Length: 121
Image (cartoon, rainbow, N blue to C red; front, side, top):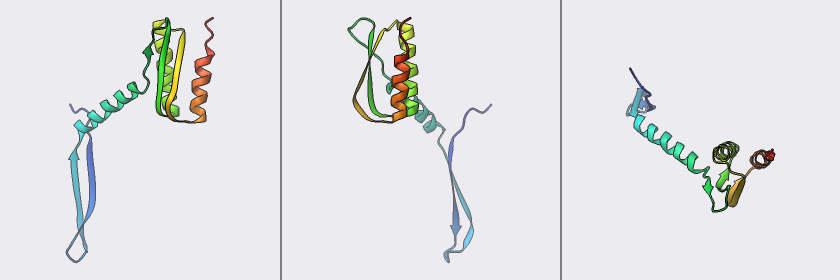
């Protein structure tokens, strides 16, 4: 059967030399492979934008925050960090905000409130 299919379709008016509408011109371009590449690249960017780096300090990780921190990105970051901590027995998380270009109030609240709730008991 058919898998997923992607196409760019552009419909334009087809005009005569006297600028009268004769009909329509439909241009259809198969872009399924480009769409697959785009989705794979988007997934890779999402994974790299929530990097977790082990440190030489026992039970500690470094999380560099780069670029613009959106609400969606901060939620993904929290999920990624908490999953990593749970599976690796991490006790300390060091956030590096030095390359962060922008962070909204809600994003900051998501990070601060969620990451400080755990008290180890």
